[in-house]
Length: 162
Ligand SMILES: [Zn+2]
Image (cartoon, rainbow, N blue to C red; front, top):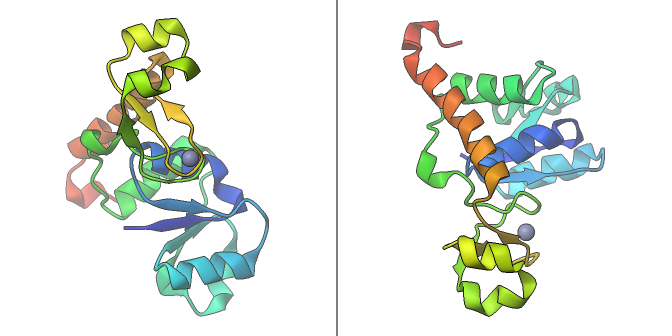
């Protein structure tokens, strides 16, 4: 399942990418652009803005009304019965959605603090923007939040999902 988040959904887009879902994000308020990306790349539009409802694409539009990004994420995952898979967490660049690639720590050691180079066995790079990622403390915090949502949703019987 692929998504395109419009300008109302920047934080949600980050959560989706964090969880490993392929998520485009249009940060300008540009309805035509969002529609074009949705059509060309077969992506579900996610927005709080109801203006998409009149665009003859109700089947490819998910209208989220929750305010808090974590609530939005929880609702979307639950409604669409998406599988949260721990193995896919933090596998995409949070800035540009590109799948990350593992890179030799030695090849990028001059770009890392000594401490990171010494303590992180795995470093990942975004092939598009060249940002480096490793599983630092903040990543563990993110994973903990995603896992909490996952176990909460797993406990819910299907009949209570809506
Ligand atoms: Zn990137």
